[in-house]
Length: 136
Length: 102
Image (tube, rainbow over all chains, first blue to last red):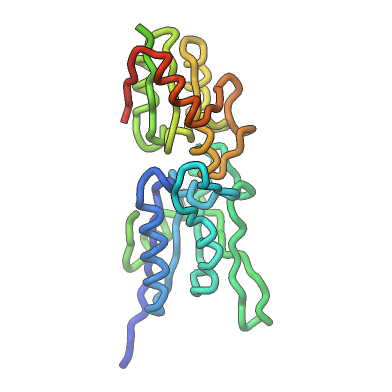
């Protein structure tokens, strides 16, 4: 059976914990990873807050799902785009975010960066290029 | 009448923080919690607005919500006090009423 590979873009615009969107997005990404599509994740606006380091939810009685992002590489999700303008507006830099990697089996399992910092203009192009956009 | 205002929405997603600060009377207390805590951090596009509010109102931010979001207390704008849940209760008790900005 021939299958068409589509470009899936998961668009994340919400901060974690305040609403359920971030967690739901991550669940859908992990489920969708079983379907061998061309997957990209985009983090814009408050979505960039999902990837901050050192999240510790013991004080608010909610599950800390941030360690799960580190597993994305194992699910062949290795294209993660962060919008620079969104970081700037929030006083953040890439150093404030988790360092996400994937292992390249064609290169002796070398760890490679999953995160790419892009401009708003480049983000527009990514959205235009996608076949399907999942909005969270 | 003293009032405790609470803001639980991100200042980048909703106008709640700006509208709260525009309506809070002099000497009022404003507590930022849940996604509202992002408004208490340094270097953001709303930092100037928040610092300006410190001239007329007392600002507080809920520590456990900062921690959950990976934001350390040294990211908090000077002049904003970090409180825990017990501090939240004290603020609610000290003031005559609580006004929530959702």
